[in-house]
Length: 143
Image (cartoon, rainbow, N blue to C red):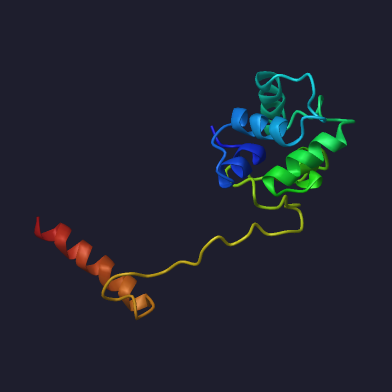
């Protein structure tokens, strides 16, 4: 299972679980989370991590506190769910990537192909491909 946006951002900030995030929120903002146990808040964070916003709707102040703790804006915390509702593609493996409209946008290039080895300085040519084919064909006749 991949990390959702909340857990990925928490881990980037050195908080290795949603329980740790809940503890940090309750410690920094006791007035916002008064009467909520760490375990209960951890469950609510888990729901948000899975993009279930039911409990968080109408609690903008709590979302803002979470966003400040994780270094995210409120829109970033709820962006994936909103993007899916609008029919955009969201990359589950890399939640940091922006949502895309695949009808008119190209996925981002994460890397460029790089040749390695002794022939890396020379781009492949048609002769190289033909030579490989001839050598393989010749080797199959010899066996």
